Image 1 (spheres, rainbow, N blue to C red):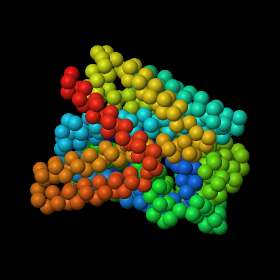
Image 2: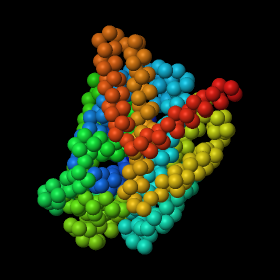
Image 3: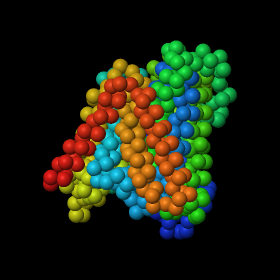
Image 4: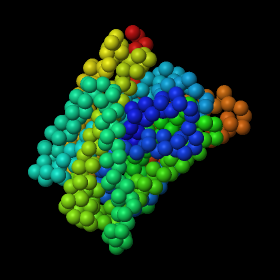
Length: 442
């Protein structure tokens, strides 16, 4: 799940705003930083079941991320006063769809953070094989969730420190795999694992693209950098393009290396793909180190996103799109009721999706989270179509074309989902409608 460092990113952006603006390089760093998270640690396991043909899915997911990033850059121009994704949608489509978006985005967070906690549990299971079974894995996932809630209780500063401490450490396995890992790459393994399930080209690319897009969730954060960028009309689109491509190159390279080291069957059943690949090439000592790095980053990322999830609910309540029970209370540093709600819902998600293999459970969580978020992105595209009327004629046409392209990519990704995953996608639609009617009556 991208945007793992949302809290840190916003803090850094605020600091930059107080000390002058940044140019293209700084803006590109902000964009890339908003999308690099811990979700990559288990994606190779989920994609391993499809095979190395899933590289085509990565390319499709990257194209969709670029279209969506362009859409949000236009939304930042058309609705500069809007706050967050629900604000963009409400500005163009009205309050009903603003509430729909808020519910879908909150649900994305609840499910996504459960997946990150699962990544932490997988790392522990690799380090202590006795804890790799389904029941211990579920208990470890729940422990990770509530550990994150406990840290958040101490406030944003504690969360920001953990995020900062674990960021560089956590990126080590990905960077090593994407660079020196090529020295251990075996083309024969990659080719033998190309399409183990015999899927059609479109089917394989589509299903893997939906899962791979998990890495790009949070691409809407790119437009948020406009306020601290010099010449934003020129630099934000360029930074967005370069940032998305850089992140995609890092992730695709890392996944391709693992698919050339571990056979598809071994990759699909792995609880810590990067550590297992290191074990096969570098020995148990470095494999243990990489597993520890993954564990620390996953827990740091999970903690940061727990706070973001809690604050999303609280800010939504303050804006009137969630019940008043969750509004900010005088003098509170963090919202106890929103943290408890987040922890409880994430625990329910972890229990409801528990499965025999870690890769399969992570794949289900990632796919459902992506579908929820894509629904919100489609609504944002619809909002841009209406808001584009505020732009000058030349820009209006470009904005509408971008919106239609982004909506088309989002629909194509959603269409590749499994029937039961798409059925889950109806939950925020129904919940948002009920919530809107309840708030309207109140």
